[in-house]
Image 1 (cartoon, one colour):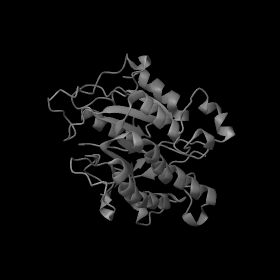
Image 2 (tube, one colour):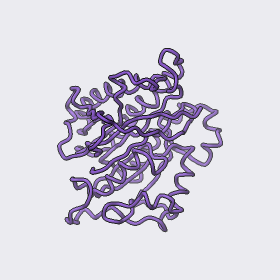
Image 3 (cartoon, helix red, strand yellow):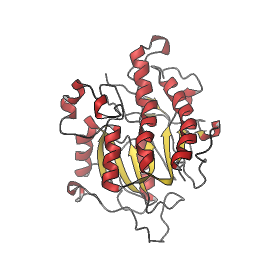
Length: 317
């Protein structure tokens, strides 16, 4: 069942992010006044994972198929010329954004903001949407959306197939392995993608979780099935735990990770059902624990951002 999830996620960025050692409520930023909604892409898998959208402002591997349409947008680390866009310099940094399936979502806007600041962009795309996404990118359908503040086009260095509902190959059911929508793709579980990124690039500095879905989001919680509830938790909350489990070991000390939450974790939002409010509450609680643990073990920051109206940058550095 294809599910349409409405979220109001914004990202905020500046140099003084919350410390990864924080475990207080302040590690969850909420700017919900007058928030603008954005619809999640209508996607599904056997566990119904969809990629959440994210809009923003302010803030070598290159497949030969992309060379015709891609213009280098990442400046050399030795270049001291100020960059337009974000008030931070991310030249020499590498970001992995999990959850980009088109050019309309939150993840896409985050990637553009990071690219404008000089970061190298890697993307994780839901497996059944991979061919459409890569074809659209290759044919220039996203070129208008790829324009950065300096007039260049955002480069996506590599696109990885990803289904964050599955942690390891052993977790994938046989009916999914043989599903024609997954045919032609390999190494798309969270563990395998992290291993592929390590093999290709060695390390990353930024991890973005732009994933959420609930197969029964349109149902009131009182009518939500156990399957629908647990599927929402799996795709929207645990997927962040899994990403950090596998990507944190390849993140450079001082790096940062962020996910996207929603005010439904704290307030009653009619129509946002199916266990999604519980999933967002769980995501916020997990963020505090993950900040505590990953900060000490890996020296990275962990934050989550709730939707707002004016400031839309990633709170990473």
